[in-house]
Image 1 (cartoon, rainbow, N blue to C red):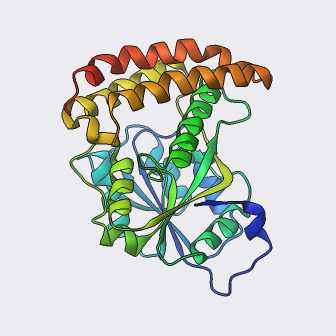
Image 2 (image 1 turned 90 degrees about the horizontal axis):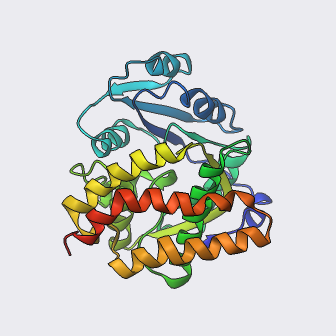
Length: 292
């Protein structure tokens, strides 16, 4: 279900649920300060921050200590680090967060948790994402394209959504089995699949968070290579999609978004042909020969 921020902002809740922010890190010294600063500045009490670090060689751990985070270590996999963070958390709601997420205003969390009051079966409050205002065209194009894809999935009730960078009811995540620790990419979407099959509901919340990710085409290529290995090992069921679905989302929706973007004077869409070339270069072989 989709929830409008305006429909929630006027309501008040008697007892605010406690929140654990669960963040895996490895050499996140550049991004982590902005992320943690946006968390501690929330107009919200009863927050803890769990960091599971992959033995960073930069100043990530020192930054985490400065903000009073609870710090643990793991180098097995991203999914394993996320699972550890949930198990070490102690609050009602867990925010499965990346170190490059920035909460845009101090009342964001206070408003977002109200979504859970709609229905006890809601496991996930999934915010939309935007690029930083000063972000690169590659960032803005990639995130805008991703949002078009997820909007299309919601409208057609196809695939899964609401995996990473979301708020979750902790007990629902644990009852669904938590993260599949055999994954080192796409583990968030596998969690979303588990929650969906367990009968839980997702709220798409329209007050966006800032995702300061994939700041260049080179960064996008590296991440895409990482993702392509998941398709090779896990097959097309990885995202519950067939090859036509993937082609439609990546090419048809992308070029349609580019045309509409030009009409709206969103000139960052000019980079889309280069963006889709980079992703195609990384993914084409793994998808073409992926297991069914």
